Amino acid sequence: MANPTTNYGFVLPTSSDLVTDLPADFDVALQGVDTRLKALQPGTTLGDIAYSSATANTNTRLGIGTTGQVLTVAGGVPTWAAASAGGWTLISTTTLVSLGSATLSLTSIPQTYKNLHVLVNDAFIITSDGEITFGQNSDAGSNYGGTWGAGGSGISNVVYSGRHKLTNNLDLDAASYPSFDCQISIFNYTSANSKMITSATHFARQTYGYTGALGESSCQIAAAVTSVQLVSAGGHWNGGTVRLYGEA
Image (tube, rainbow, N blue to C red):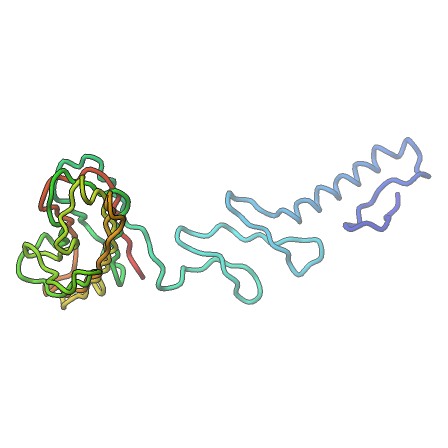
């Protein structure tokens, strides 16, 4: 047996070894290979990660992290840690295919985030003309105030039927404005004080392309937001997706 110059220092038979010695020689060699392979792949659990350690030709096992953690570096080595503040977490996804109702209500909102964001995407269609409004905690009182700004239409009131208006006097219908997209943000939603809401919306016209609007309003409901509502003043919702996010 000899120890030729290799990357891993494996002990291998040489040309001068006797044939009768080869079984034992290969047993020694393969044990070395097995030991080295385990050193290079020290994982024991699904999701483990191996990274180079301070010892030559040896890796260190990093056990899988927990749900929501991210991979970062601390002290010069990789480690799992909580996600940085400010990230968005998906709370719920609702597909509005033939919802059969003019109101969508997202309830049981967790009170563990700083801000809420509601994203409405891709072909929100209702069966007849009607304003689209947004409310909190099923409230339809005189608790909203603010203004809309839209290209070519100036500034208008942001309130309709006691809720936050999203469509700026443009009734949504399948013929003229077949799709609806918007983002609604509610800041400091766990507070019982007034909350600022911002909304950006746009519509797809079959003939004229896109038209958009930007609105800002405040909500005077003296309670934390535990549910939000999207309400059609015309027909029922018939398509689209609503995603609710919490921001840390």
